[in-house]
Image (tube, rainbow, N blue to C red; front, top):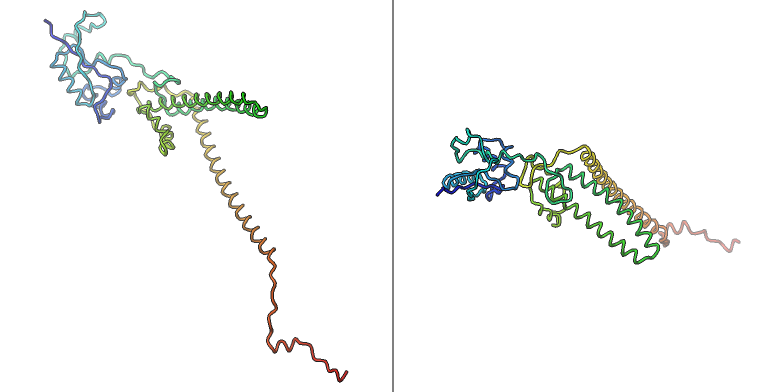
Length: 315
């Protein structure tokens, strides 16, 4: 009876508390390989690191992998007829294989250098510039549609058409819903590029945290190589850079406009307060009629001011 054979399978899962970068460095040291080659193992798909191992060799190999921080597993390998595609070089096949040798078969698989862009999906990754550019395109497409619906709504209001208002409201609701859904998809792919779960989008709904979390998404750099969500996104095109620059200019103008508007409102309120205070003081001074009572003079002053007596005998 032939001896059973086993294989070591790894799907990118790490042991609890292990950082992915640390695991990559440990694997590179174990296999005596480059980190760029090790990154191909973290594509999210099960990979057979080693085949045709005895049970003892498989246990030793698995223990060595667990020491690096990865969560691999042993699977029984059924005995099958040899396939010509699996035939290796006779020279290399004749050499004894150590359970600690690099996984040559799996690393030899050609992986895509860049991920395929899927704007309307939850899979894939996009970088910071592409996230801003796609958001800019979504805004440029949505604003004219909203403007058209607004004009139609104003016409319906002036015509007192209740049915038209209801239909316009339904269209506006579905348009807003589509805008939100597409924005969520963009955010999920941006989180994947950072290496975070897409469920973290729900932090936007948390009070106070949701006020600055979108800024974190825009400024956090993505993983350079492949992560558990796939290969990195393709390089940014010229259109992406131009749209991103327009979005940054728009944000800057909006911020400056908000600051200028706030300062103008504060200044106008201050001037109105001063003017109202001045008008209140003038009315009080003009409308109050103060009557001054004559004061009694001293006897000497009264004698000086009194007219001289008239002698009636002389007259």
